Image (tube, rainbow, N blue to C red; front, side, top):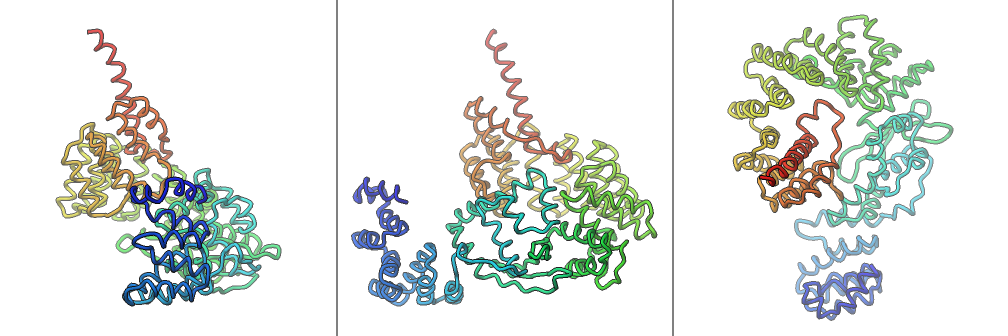
Length: 587
């Protein structure tokens, strides 16, 4: 801020006014901590920034003087309240919470009255998060965990102090991409808040102040803590006591560490402890599926809340949870494979096979997925779940003809079945017949099944044909209208614009997608569009460099229709053009 103030002073107020930056020096002085300088600079402006002057006066002489300043410059009650609210926001940005509360209180009125009063009440007790000292309690473990995504310099050592033994086991089992997402969460959060005009520190302070975990449990079985976040959603967190310290076990979202804890307790003969965790999880996860007898979450199939402790069933329930997440899939699959050989009933066998489909899909074990999904489809021929898993397995094995035959068989069983047609589209696209894929998409649309993602896919497939026209762009635009601000759909539109040579609109749409993705630097999807734009400008070396930044997808099913595949097509085309150019020049 000091550098900005020095630069503004060097430019001079008259020049700043010519540049449309007349207020910048006063605001820079205020946020730089020079309240007297800010007030003096603001006095010289026309019109005067009333809220800035009120906020600066509050910092110099207190809230009463600041509000008097706001009232002095107000033309009526409405303008006073508006000035007070804006000044309150400025004070809140500087983490001057008691003063900000007074201004929001005074500014409450109109449609925003309830919000202003609620915010004022929150600010009165808000504290700077770095000044808060946490106790060794389950509730404070939850508070520490909620603040993790705000940490700009998160390290593994920070999490070692917070996580339980099994929580750390899951963290250590994550691959490099998953760990990067965890440790760079604070930077992404900071970037997102900055785009929204918010402060990371202020948001963290308010989140912490609003937290009020409510828990149940004991040191022997652990604790289940529920807390309502600032956005209104409820977070469920599990805490255990290890070596005298309360530690974070897991959340309800992906409870793989809880499953590991269950297995430890079962192995130690602590069946009641394992049951306590299972019952808590089962309370919030219910059987679903609708018309599909194999649909819905798998875990509830293995356990009913309140059941008597039984090691075998509890171990299968834990394995089903483990199989459903990448860091623990191998352990879950291993348990389930052994259990499948000794299944005690047809129902148990079916449930184990269902759990294995999730694990095999995560492991990209398409042969295993084909085996279990085929058995399930034979058992339940109309099951949507078994059908889709079967087709995905065949595509993963590059067996496109059997995959199409399977979809055709389902269409005979269930006329005009949407799932069968959608899987046929995916199969045709993956084997490179994009014309057939688009024709099937249009058939679905003609049946009244049109939606944003279907239109997006139809437009996306046009990129692989090597020829894009205005009809394709119109389809992508229609997709953006059906689903506003979806970055993946905007990316498709940007690609189409770039392909058609409309580099200006391609860039504008791409920048919007980057904002929605919360990107400070290009990802693979962005690099492709930048490369295509560079090509359109004849910047061959830049385009080659941009395309070279894309990483080959690890999932073979996703690869044939990926952005990486498009980049490879462009690299091949550019290589062919380069090879042909010398020959043309010799004619």
